[in-house]
Length: 250
Ligand SMILES: [Zn+2]
Image (cartoon, rainbow, N blue to C red; front, side, top):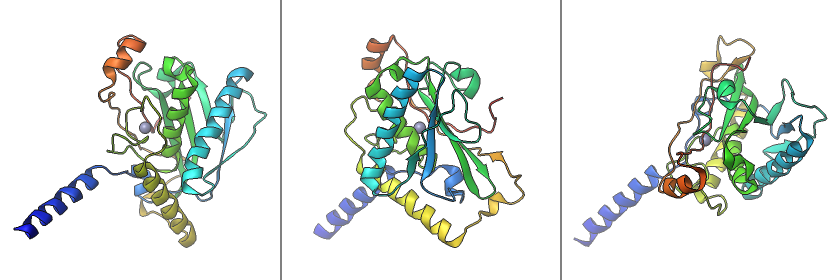
């Protein structure tokens, strides 16, 4: 009898741990990876005040991950460029989010786009939705950027509602969850393994030298916090989304 109870308990625990797990983005899971770490990121913005703000939050967001994982995943490239940095890995503010990403500017806070080239993830772009009020708040923007940085290397949305990589934003940031850290460690170790053997995903064959990744993250409304947010921000359901599209910006 006791054995049966223990067995049942074991099954329950396994079920819970399986349903609360980090996930890889489909491109990363299919074997596309960064050829080199750290990934050099830069903030581009024609508004110098806003650029300085995003720059400082970007550094904090990158360090949250790197301090937890102990690996140099990103580096900061202090770009002298203004509003554009073609071919670079950028974090940028968009006042035309919906038109540029095809995502709703009402329900989407930011989007992460990854571009592949051959077997590699070649470039990434984090686009901040400039018309969303939460992005004017440093505290929220930090959480939003931490989440988006997870997407840049191959972490998808987690089923763990307490993870920063959950599809909905945590209104209170309590640090990266163990699920986030486990997920990032798994991404980094898989990336290092791929790099060591020069892995080429069979799916990369026949690709042109520059193509986009058809990956996307789903959008989910805020869990349990929508009422709170609605009162704060005027009745909109908001979600945090990582988003990758086939369509390139024009
Ligand atoms: Zn996301």
